[in-house]
Length: 162
Image 1: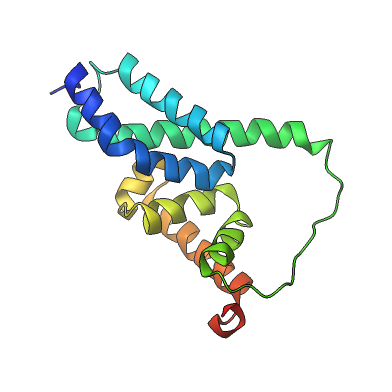
Image 2: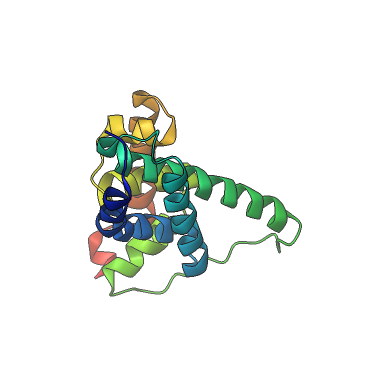
């Protein structure tokens, strides 16, 4: 069964918030995240006759993921020549665990951050993450493992956070 206009509206109501959270965590800019979401839903509308209703959520996350990676790639090329060449590390103590986790996630490579967010924030299975990102199951598991290790290294012990 393909996506009808009524079902499309239901998809917007059901998936827009989760898709927006995912995009915002990856893009770190509200307007860019909104653009990604809008373009993802636009692509669903354009391809509504080819997308099965049962796969609409996966389709939206896949489209958003690829749009974000393309956007990030373009910005990296653009910013490559504008970089100052040094990385500021803030060693202040934090009391807000969400802020610490967000800062740790920001430091991850895009692919690691994406798969970690899909798994831990959105609750996708490894297989679904593989479908969304185009990675095989082993790659998904490795990237998630590496992301968690990097998060652990950045955060250190929970006592340092609290």
